[in-house]
Figure 1: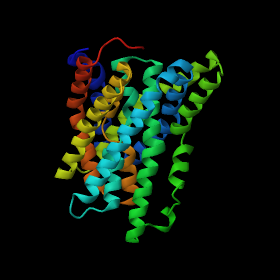
Figure 2 (figure 1 turned 60 degrees about the vertical axis):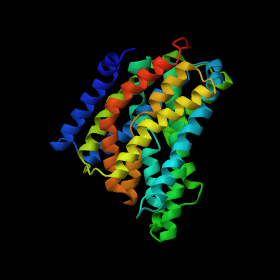
Figure 3 (figure 1 turned 45 degrees about the vertical axis):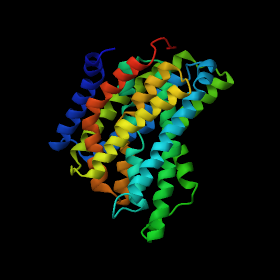
Figure 4 (figure 1 turned 90 degrees about the vertical axis):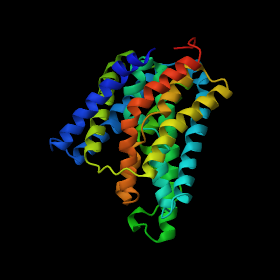
Length: 328
């Protein structure tokens, strides 16, 4: 698959829809509050429906084959997550653990929920394999990364005496909260149903598919609105955050996947998933706690811009590096 095909069929549609959202935000047609409502539709309905209906139609054999994918995704993403945390906590003067935690939530996590299907399906097709990659990476980000980041954030704010009373939480509260979200439990439920051998009624699929179709376009449009509301300020932290997210994470996924002889198709999809821009959820948390807001939003904006260039390169390199014969 050439770079021109990736640009025309995967990147250009995303840029066009995101630009439409950006312009509508700048013109005041939609506001940041509207974007939050769109995001809620995506995260609570459209994305869980897309993940659930795709996974529940897969087989036990496919799930067993994806065990290596799950372990490598967990190790790579969380290793990069913690690396970002330590770098931004201890290597930049004036930063503290709270800043490092927000930096990790942004630059240590791919925005798989918002752009996963929008990017992977035009490149790899609408298959259960794509849904499983999106689901597994999404579970790592939402059920592991966010709870860890919130725990680090709250611990740092507690030391500084800055945690508002309403936001003081037990160590397990972020984990429980993350698993309560449909985007986390829907794919887990689908995996359980497949493993126990429950046959999915085909007549239910059209209803889920209709909801799932809203996922990619609404998520990308909402991302454009969100970017229209942030003030861009370029600095070294924003640049380094973008480099770590767009280059280091996919490179780490490729190296680890090759070392452990990961399925070529799964590895290609994981590399592209890891090359996605930073997680928008990190910006939401940053704004809620009023921590690292300016630099975090600038890093996100820069990463989205650079993603247009880096994504085709990531896909092309993996296609050249890895064999083409793999399961679909």
